[in-house]
Length: 428
Image (cartoon, rainbow, N blue to C red; front, side, top):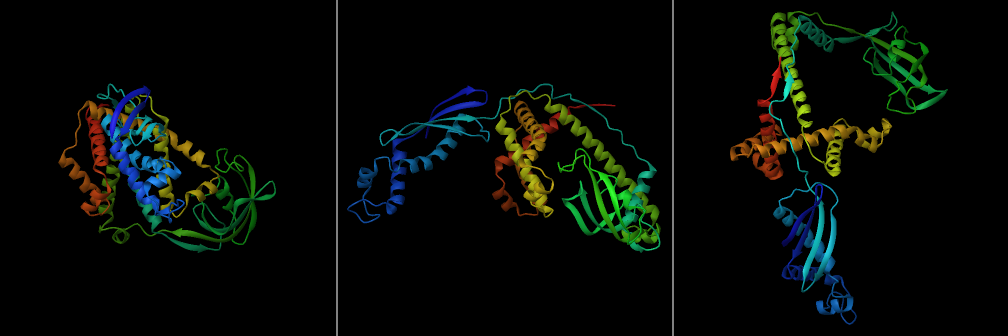
């Protein structure tokens, strides 16, 4: 392969002229002939027995050229990109065949979209506001109450009406303008009143009714409801109440503490909860400052970002979302159906996040370049070990799966972010 020329033709667009030598091209044509001639019939010869010269005479000299080009093109392009020192964005490549033949070899041009040129200034000294960490005794009491409720048991209630906080079992069917609507029916559905599982106002209207009662509930769906046919509409639900259960809470004492923790006394448990709550709030404050810093950092990026770069990140985010859905036992197609959402809507929702992530990536790449950040062998080995420990996978297997270039990119990005973090200014 020879890179004959490389030139910038537009913003983030390069044109490469590439040639494959006659020797390499003819060698590949011969390889294609050996593979394909077995399936070719030429008059006067048994199938697969005609010599190359007769095949080319009968079908044309270029009979094997297309397959040879298709085989040579990827490696030739990759080598040319590496030699040109550019990095492609995941976008369509414009291809132009210049000439091809036994004497000329294979010559072609491509126009490609490359990573954008980035400018960034003042990334040192970014100002962030210190986040106040507020702790109150009520935080511990609320946590204890939550733990109590988790360890409570449900007791059937028969002598009173349902109250907020009770767990009920109901049949329901929703009607819009007197007609049942899709997804609005359920039988023996367990509904905890006050958890806001249903449309606002639904659970409050179940409260006050007794077991065996059949009654109607009138609710208005929110204007922003995901099912567009119901958004902002008044509906009627017919309800039958089968069962009411209340939660009986355990006594909050030393015996309870021994059952739910490794501590022996309530005082010890409270102290441990206090320490954990304080630590959690401190970490939240640090995370908020980090997010503020990152938001300000990405505003410093000056670049004309290729649309393909953003679309690629959107696809990544959609794919991650699909994996999370699958982990919950739900297919993406079913999720889109249940929420009356199109793939275009989903991609549109992810676009702002994709744009921010792309800008952050570009910022950190540029900072690592300006600061001459180069991962050491020790850095690389540490990162591989971290991945190995996180996924509980053998180190050699990790190294085979995760390309070293990806590891280097992660390391340089983290080091660049640390430079920004170390030089930020925290305002009291």
